[in-house]
Image (cartoon, rainbow, N blue to C red; front, top):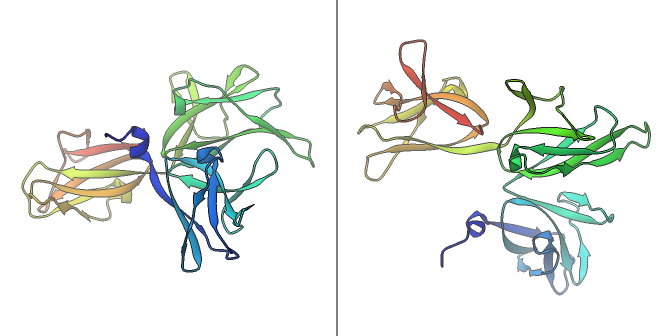
Length: 264
């Protein structure tokens, strides 16, 4: 039976209870099952471990130790809307906090390219006990990438001038770049004895060795790239080449560099 997209995206996550004080059994329960299913934990030396397969996201969970629901104080903790403390598990995503604090408002919503500008996410008002000032906050888990967004203040669209922006003609949006993105560079245009990768991602300082495939027809290297625009070339048996089949632009020396836009 073919795997669903969700099953392909699922990652195995190990949850560990290492605080001791377990007499009979240890379990873990979390928001991934709407707190309905307790996953049994297995004792491994002095620790108790459970493996769960989860899609990318941010989850809350608790340990059930001999029937008592508890959190591990050595792991990240979040307090929910009911005042309960839960541990936090982040799988494959970065949770970003969006804040509007530039003017008073009755309602503030967030909209952006992370869901093709299709929704308006309500932002919760938080008031300072000391100063009495207010700010509006929402948190959203996002995969690595580049996003644009705006705040809707009492029905009117605004961007925050104190944060990074992106301009498209007369339209200005806030811009957010988060995380790194794995990228595979491939050279398969010639038979070679040695291929290296060089680029602007480290100011052209280092030649990165590439790995030859078993059939000898291609070379590759995997790098975790920060978001942005990069220029690069391949050093093939000592000669600098660019791949004509990939995006490229002219350089000042009469040749071309390949171009990689990460997160754009």
